[in-house]
Image 1 (tube, rainbow, N blue to C red):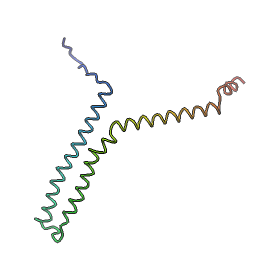
Image 2: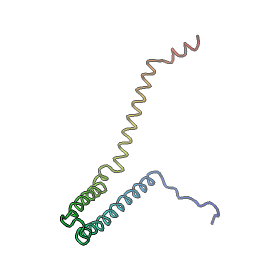
Image 3: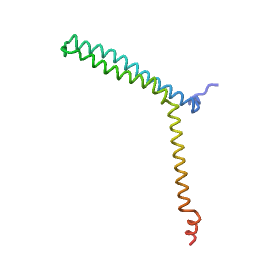
Image 4: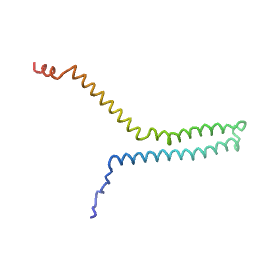
Length: 130
């Protein structure tokens, strides 16, 4: 039966939603890395052209240092995307979040115990009665 008006939204549970968000995040990271690679290659060619063809600073091959520095930054970017994300990815974030929440709950219960020992309810009730 066809229904007009509101479309039925597909129901996705929370776990699937988190998996989809994580996948989209990884896709964006890899896309940025490949964009960085293309810009690096084109930029390197331009640096060589500027130094050799346009003879800007032709006394010294400065483009080598610029390309070396840029390649180092690209390697750091690739390391971050492919290595660091595996060790400190979604699962690591979840564990850290759970650990911090547990610490906060423990601290709150400790503070509640201190309050109950310093200001017991029986004393507060007696003062109200007087």
